[in-house]
Image 1: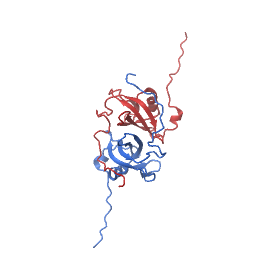
Image 2: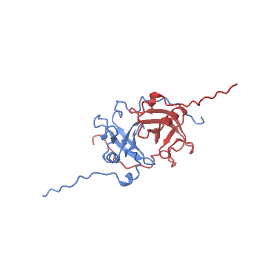
Image 3: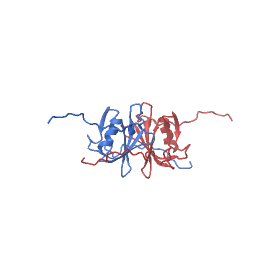
Image 4: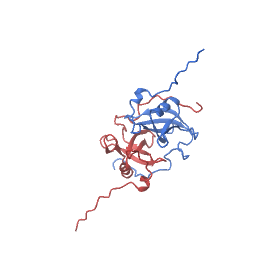
Length: 129
Length: 129
């Protein structure tokens, strides 16, 4: 039997999604990652079209690292994977909400979220003030 | 009695906060806005140093509008104010988590959040896959 070589089929972002993205000057949108059941905001990362496509199709969250200029899949080095539950794009197309099941710590420091322990001491507001 | 004129005292961002901000090419950091009790992620906005300073000191959330190139205080035109509960900066200084009490709809479309109804149909991930 003759061997038939075909190009690998790479998934690409559907046009109806790509057309709605409002990318920044670096072709990125920000991605807010939230624990699906507790509602904790775990971290914020950045995605280009390819990272979003991988996230939508693989069940694992993939980001673009602005500092290292490479793709990274959360958990590949730490074991602290993020398993996708849902992904939504906001009304004006420049932010994603990625609801996940986070294994262990989301922050590279070992904290559960990247915001833990970094309170800025804001003045609290109340209606009527 | 002689009148003494003094410059208005404008609050400025404390140096220990300003020094930790990792601003993008437009001098902005992204701000994730979350309803403090339900955990809903309501919207994502953008803040420069001045918008963050106003948010930390006034009890009301102020953003920088990238499209209109001006400050805007959520609720001033819609009545849908965001009253600040807490503000935290993430581990690497490029994202803020602003926990608020949101009056009414957070989205300009009238939806409660800017992500409502914009699900992208992601494949769900599970450990072991």
